Amino acid sequence: MASTLKKLFRGSNDSSADLSEAKEKNAQIGEQIYVEGVPVYQDGNGAPVEQVSPLGYHVGWAGILFLNVSQMVGTGVFSTPGSILRALDSVGLSILYWVFGMIISFAGLAVYMEYASLFPHRSGGQVTYLEQAYPKPKFLFPTAYAFIVVAFSFSSSNAVVLARYIYRAAGYSASEWANKGLAISAYTFLAILCLLSTRWSIRLMNLISAVKLIILVFIAITGFAVLGGNTRVKQPRANFQNSFDGITHNANGIVNALVNINFAYEGYSNAFNVVAEIRNPFHTLKRVAPLSVLIVSILYILANVAYFAAVPAEEIRESEQLAAALFFEAVFGEAGKALPALVAVSAAGNIMAVIIGSTRNIRECARQGVIPWPHIWASTKPFGTPFAPILLKWALTCIVILALPFGDAFNFLVDLRSYPDSVFLFLMVVGVYYVRYRRKQEGLPQAPFQAWHSALIFSALVCLFILIMPWYPPEDGGDVSFWYATYCAVGIGLLVGMGIYYLFWCQLLPKWLGYKIRTETVVSDQDGAVTHRLLRVKNAEVEAWDRVHDDAGNLLVEAVETSGAQTENQHLQKRVKVNDATHVDHTNAEKA
Image (cartoon, rainbow, N blue to C red; front, side, top):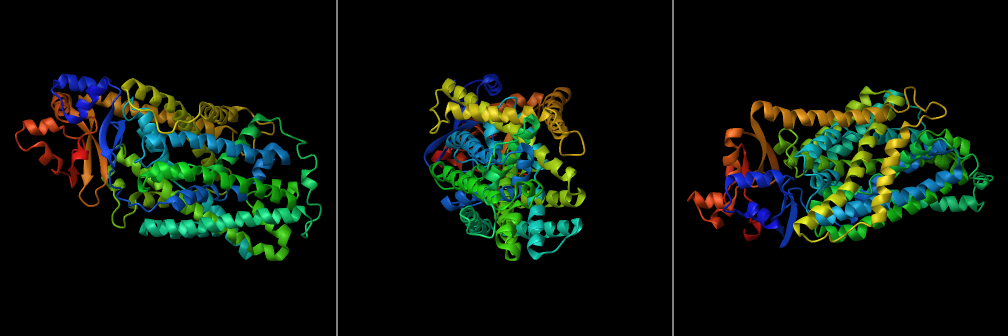
């Protein structure tokens, strides 16, 4: 099998029928290119590896650390303690959940690390790993994921929390539309920064991330001072007496708290969205990514202890998104009312980290060819940044902020986005075993890093728990004005809808209209961005197409040699114009 695959990528003497059969039936893991002298094995249908990142290499160890830290430490630890306490009815269990969140994050991180060790030059994180884990049916997972990531590429909740904390610090009681206006203005400013320069946006994000770590350290130290009785807070240990009394037995409340914890830790995988922009990526990720989770986890736990030391549990329960503001005011009185501005700074850093990471995610979807006009979405012109993805995120964020009233509808979208995420993470865990099996069948080496079975099983079980338990009816009817499981039903509906769309687009239409979908590799003349473009090849022309192209859409070397046009070495440097892009052969790029 492996020899057949290498023939596919390097040219062979097989007939076109054999080539077509291999394309349709083989496992399609092949040695496509060399990057820095190391062979890269990935499925031929996946987005082509960019040997030189058009986005540059601006992410070092600090960038990895703070990309993760800044997305994790956004608004979750400052805004979710109240909702977690409402769901669990127990101070002790609420704090224990933050420990549980740390364990979940480390288990999930192990999954990402194995994929990153196999595909160390592909950005995009989850979308890339699903593409490689499930190459068949062709384009199913890239299509489904692209729809979800594009449709939900907004950061409205953090922008709104940022606005609320700014107004809180200013002592101004803002109306809903005042909050909306400030949220849009702040998000627009941060999006422009990320649009103009990757280097300077990452540097600014690193600075803000360092500030937010200082904020959490300050809260933790202040918490110890409160517990020691050295502040104006009276009875600082009251919330810790019989702290496990009143634990809820409602499964819906337990899972809602878990969803909130996941939201607070969301971002431990953000650096995997920019892997192609890191020099020596896996070595650096292996050292820095776990450190980011450990630092944040310790500070999260200490911050929550500080909150419960300074603020009565009932006030935290009703705090909505302002638990940190109550803490500052309880400890520092009137002087503490200005400190929520620091939380707003933290939210700003989170927004920048999300923009940097998620726009690479969108760009990678485009490079797979499943988004219309992939060359536009993959382009890094004019500023060396993903212009179109950033513009998309900005537009959708503004629409959501303006269109939806604060409250149930606004929170519904946040919950809805989390449901497919859990589905995709579960599929990633299962995909690890599938990738291992396929590589063993092909005689390829094992992954440089292999996640422990316990971490994989634990991650899968957590995902299943989050997916199944929200269907259990809450005792109080839920905390929304509509059916408590609406977001679950809609999330499943979206995934089923994408399956139906895929069946129609990729199976039925080609059958009815007499064509097959083939990939073509194109390279931009402007910035060197490499993408796939999906083409409709008529059935009568499929045999000829498969004779001269490999699975990645590159021209086979033999096809060019037999045309008498040039030698193999000359072919490696040839660029063929294709609609303002370039069709390039990467099959023997190690020789170029």
